[in-house]
Image 1 (cartoon, rainbow, N blue to C red):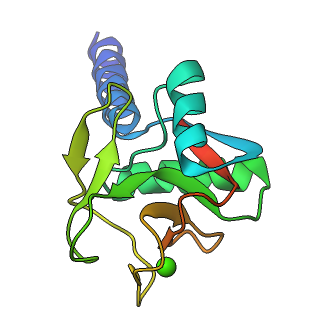
Image 2: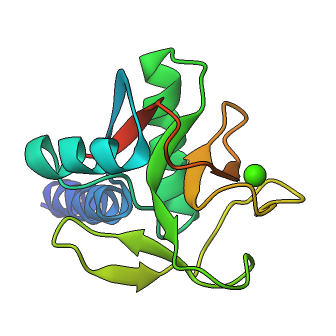
Length: 143
Ligand SMILES: [Ca+2]
C-alpha cells in the first residue's frame, strides 16, 4: 500500500516538472528564403505567429536551438525594429497584430546597437545586431 502511494507521488512530481519546463519553451521556425525585414514580417504574419520575438533567456535559448537545428549559419531577421531617435532607446517588438512592445530584455552584441540600421538581426554567434532593414536575409518566425 505504501509503495503504491509513493508511485503516485513520484508521478505527480514528474507531471508538475514537465509542465514547468514546457511553459518556458517557445517554438520558432527558421525560414531560409531571403527577404527584407518588412517582407519577412509579412511572411511570418501570414503563415506563422509573427516575426520572432524574444522575452527572456529561456525564449532566446529556444530560438538558438531552432537556429542550430536548421543548420543555417547566416544572419537572420527577428521582429525587433527601432522607432527613431536615440539608437540606444526606442527598440520594439512588432507583433502579428501590428502592436509595438518595448524591448525590455535584449542580447545585443557588445557595441550594438551601432546605429547602422533600424531592424534587428541575430547573428550566427546568437547575439543581436542592428542592421539595414532593406537587406534581404533569412529570418525566424514565432511558430
Ligand atoms: Ca549594427
